[in-house]
Image (cartoon, rainbow, N blue to C red):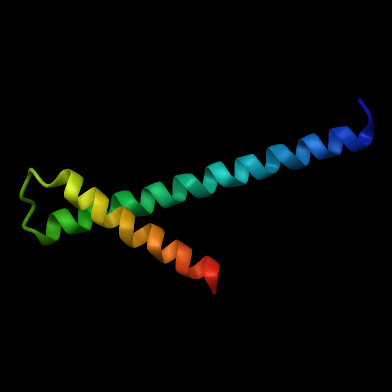
Length: 69
């Protein structure tokens, strides 16, 4: 394998690792926000999907705003 191809492969892998790490951080932030929503409602069970969807919308909307800026 040539040095150029080897360097490109390492670069591609680093990008994927970085993306995976970012995805994990986003998922963690969504999880934390969903739990905050659950607690704010008095820890009433039965609204998990609603909490997750709202948290996901808030977090992903926030990320898209930062990217556009």
